[in-house]
Image (cartoon, rainbow, N blue to C red; front, side, top):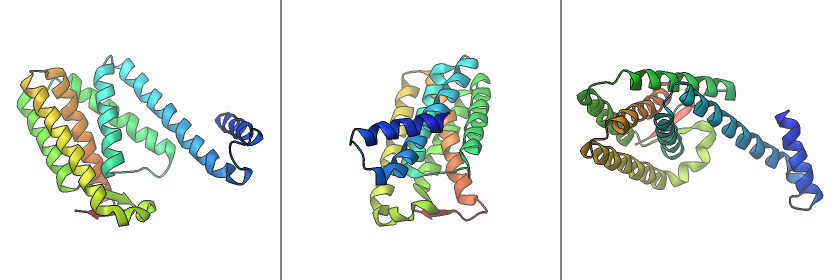
Length: 194
């Protein structure tokens, strides 16, 4: 059904001379990625709603998407496996958030995760080798976002925002775990840059 919808959009774009017919596969791939991202994000938001933790869910998804985009991390082999990993990761995160962990544990988890993200700023999947020429810029960008996460984490701590610190700490833990999972992956699909 989604494929048919995608190709209807492409046919409209071609018939209106917006895109070239020779590029329809590229646009089909892009639309497929877009729709799958929207669908998976909606499923994750519904998961957060089910747990009664929508604010926490938004924090986790936002930090995770940013971390994956700027520094890389684990990537499942298929979209279904990716969705399953995100769904179960989010459920584990919701369990940790519901556990109302001690602030000391949250601080250790948050700062420890930031150290991991800083120490391993860029993990490229082998299908992204074309980005090697931009390695320094990508590492600097990843470290900049990690510093931004650190500043936000500290600000929320000093504001006494336990709910946000709880969510932020768990989100950072998921980001660090994803980065580490890519590094220790046995399938050698990742290249680590320090």
